[in-house]
Image 1 (cartoon, rainbow, N blue to C red):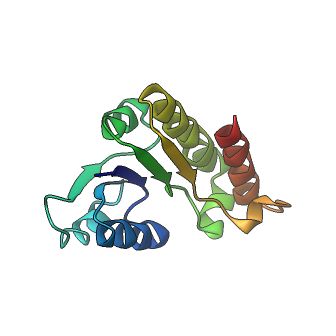
Image 2: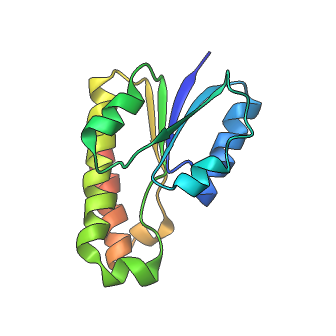
Image 3: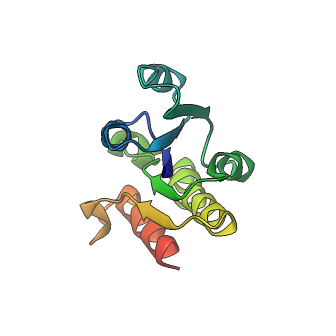
Length: 142
């Protein structure tokens, strides 16, 4: 049975991905910094679903969550343009440094498949958010 870590599992895309994975019978580890959002996911069967409260900016926590996973789907990011444009340093810590942590941990743990969820805003970035996601894509390819 495939074990999948989903970062940003409590977000809109993360929740949809968790739903699909659970329906396919995958074991899912849902990681997020939203305590409320994670609590909303408690309806999944315990044998298929584990909640991991943690921040992708913390390499140690990411590495702990990644242990024994076959796949990682990296959805975690700061996404709200009003917030991100007003706090670029925090945006970079999450979208860039956090992505580095997830990528390094995936390599160190021998994860077979690593998927980054990005955005069309990264193609020709006109905002700090788009630029941070473009950097995340470059990091992921590296």
